[in-house]
Image 1 (spheres, helix red, strand yellow):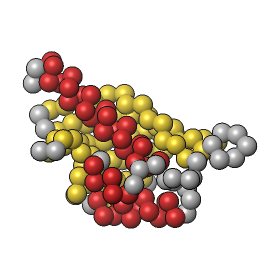
Image 2 (tube, rainbow, N blue to C red; image 1 turned 60 degrees about the vertical axis):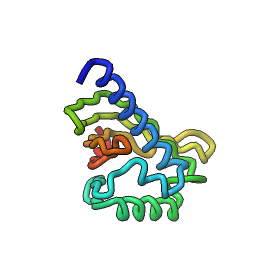
Image 3 (tube, rainbow, N blue to C red; image 1 turned 90 degrees about the vertical axis):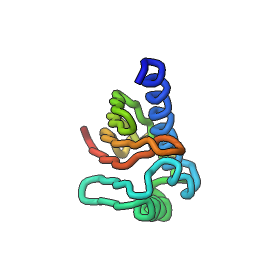
Image 4 (spheres, rainbow, N blue to C red; image 1 turned 180 degrees about the vertical axis):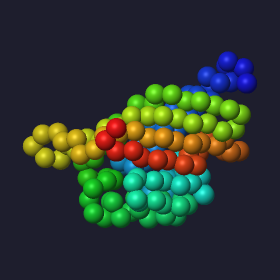
Length: 136
């Protein structure tokens, strides 16, 4: 890959990771398919979701409980630290901070990092694995 190609792909991955935060906060559940590969894995401690359907179902449970999604007041703030690209595969490391602004002030219910694996498909990059590591 040329320097220009790497720069273009890096920007595409960073945009995708930003979109992942937006989808979790305000996006329609159908938009998860624009972020996660059909066979993706999502992991937070013992909560492991295999495949897009389980990832969306988990997001729906969080939304139903009022702890994520539209109206919850939760916002994911993510900072992508590194993106390493090798052909059609990539790894990204990010810090995140959850902010809750529904009360009388701001609360920060969780912080940590994302360890993402991504793959480039015909339609662009998608997350194939996300490990959420809280408190680090």
